[in-house]
Image 1 (cartoon, rainbow, N blue to C red):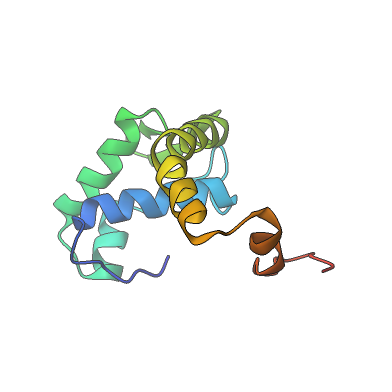
Image 2 (image 1 turned 30 degrees about the vertical axis):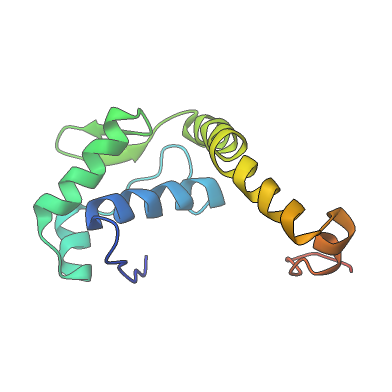
Length: 124
C-alpha cells in the first residue's frame, strides 16, 4: 500500500479512502486481514493513533470487523455495500456538477468516449 499524502485532507481520512479503494478494486476481499496498525504506522511513518482512527471509521461503516487478538478483517458484503454507496454518492453529489461542466464545454458522449483512456482488456 503506497501513499502520497494530500495536505488538504486529514491523513486518517486518506488512509480510510485507500482501504476503501483496495476493497473496491478487489485487492482486499471479504475475509482478508488488513495490515496491523503498528505495521501501517511504521511503513508510512505516521502515528498509530492516526491508523487506528482510519480503521475505526471502517469498523463504524461495517466494512471491516475487529477480531479480538487477531486484527481487522474485511466483512462479508463490504464490496457490494461500498459499490452501492460510491455509485449513489457519484450520481447525487459529483455527476450533476460534472454534467453541467460538460454541457458548458459542449462535450458529448462521443467526445468523451473518443478520448477515454484505455483500460486493461480494452480492444479500442
